[in-house]
Image 1 (tube, rainbow, N blue to C red):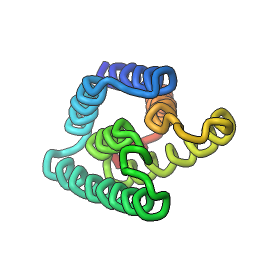
Image 2: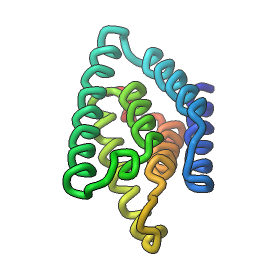
Image 3: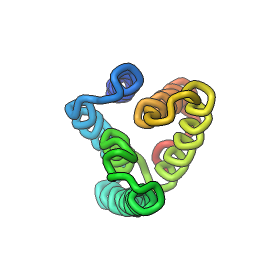
Image 4: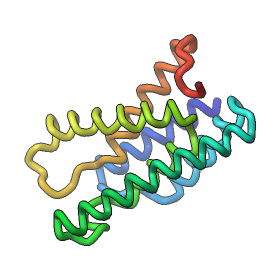
Length: 156
């Protein structure tokens, strides 16, 4: 049941981001709670919190590098370079998945978003709905996990 709620919330975030280019903060809060609950159901608590710490460190490094790139290379304010919803989704991913799974899903969703943005959003120079595209990717992965449960990908 929690898996379907998570998928629904991801699709809701994707819809909001693709349609309005903004996502309600409550959506991320609910998704964070669902992700934490899923993690605690599948992992022991000490390992769960260790993986959250490691994943959060990865997200912090990515955000720092992105901040430096946007500020010094692009010459923009940070909020003009990336949406807060994108960072909130990365935090949710950091909480919801094990380290190995997080790295694979983070990288995979970035590649998926890059390809999808190149195909569908070529003409839009300013805004790519990164959180929405990553949410679509994660929804697909979670659906595959549900239908092909033998694929033990989420909490290895």
